[in-house]
Amino acid sequence: MSVDRRTQAQRLDAADPLAAFRDEFVIGEPDLVYLDGNSLGRLPRVTRDRLRAAVDEEWGVDLVRGWDRWIALAREAGEVLATGVLGADPGEVLLADSTSVNLYKLAVAACDARPGRRVIVTDDDNFPTDRYVLEGVAAARDLTLRVIRSDLDTGVSIAAVREALDDDVALVSLSHVAYRSGAIADVDAITRAVHDAGALMLWDLCHSAGAVPVPLRSAGVDLAVGCTYKHLNAGPGAPAFLYVRSDLQAELRQPIWGWFGQRDQFAMGPAYDPAPSMDRFLVGTPPVLGGYAALCGATLSASAGIDRIFAKSTALGDFAIELFDEWLAPHGFALASPRSGRGAHVTLHHHGAWQISQALREASVIPDYRTPDRLRLGLAPLYTRFADVYEGLDRLRTIMEAESWRRFSANRSRVT
Ligand SMILES: *Cc1c(COP(=O)(O)O)cnc(C)c1O
Image 1 (cartoon, rainbow, N blue to C red):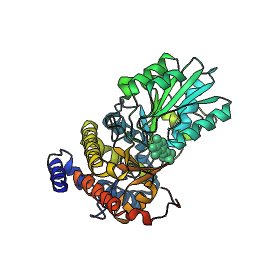
Image 2 (cartoon, rainbow, N blue to C red; image 1 turned 90 degrees about the vertical axis):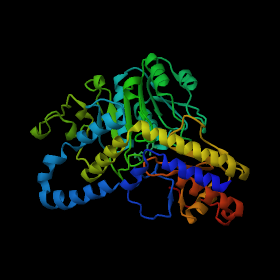
Image 3 (tube, protein in one colour; image 1 turned 60 degrees about the horizontal axis):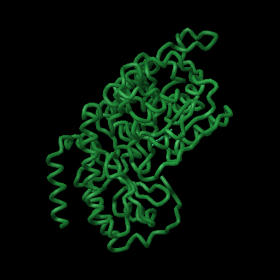
Image 4 (cartoon, rainbow, N blue to C red; image 1 turned 60 degrees about the vertical axis):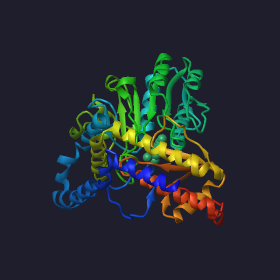
């Protein structure tokens, strides 16, 4: 049977319209099965070259004159993200700050735009930074954070969102793709329900951007944030993005009044007067090198096409689930992701998940461990081959058969 599965993987790779994109990336260790591109994407070759040129020629030679070019980078990258990755319009997306900071800026702006409403809604399976930022916004403004219960494996449900809504809700903030299970939330239905209740909707797109189509325009989403270092491959610490629907931009005010959000920035005027456009959501001097990396990464994903990327991620996940059913379920694993309606990762539950993740690293397979007892396998579609899924899960099967994972301590000393 294992020969058949290997042949199946080879055939799937041969028929993959995105197969050539793997060559666009630096592959440092050919034997390494990298299943963590949803934590940190690989380095695109074009990005490495662009960063070298930016360092040598722009910083090294142009010096401060480089700002003539760098000043437009947040908008330039935002345009590629809007039109090539996120299904938004030009002028609705900017590169800026981190996801956490952007979430804070937009959550405060949303609460200010709904004065008198006292409740923010999120769910208990939302990413930690989202829950903490919203908790902090609620605490500082004496609002209530209403936390929906979500199933760890199937994600947030429209029924639970509806139940949490009333005319006291100012803002609902959720993740589009659940970081733990990969479950995709119903953006259309949830956004509509939130609007019917008179509240604003803020989506976190960290695990969707570059992996899953995001119906921002068609669903009429108000606000969104996301990072670029996961499926957009922009590298560690690259800046995040934020989206504000065009008709809301003039109405919303974000709380960090920096000079990059000022109407006439270089007039150096006496008082804050926010730009009438999306620029008002900027704060201060942007990270230029990370900005170039985000521009390159977004351009690469846009050239592959988000629909093709999503089709491949679904096929990779389906193949991983077939192998799970055949090879891993007999060893005590349970599927902790939906069988359909998933982002680009598949999560497996096992009581020894921490030890198993250590054994996999020793076998040159990099998965992610996620609390409480889950192994998360990121299947980044631009460079993950079906053969990698085969190889990674074959090594996992060997570890389970030999029970070699039991040698590793159950004590979690480090978590990434
Ligand atoms: C990765 C991730 C973040 C990260 O936020 P940072 O500010 O970049 O640390 C936030 N939200 C979600 C859903 C994520 O998956």
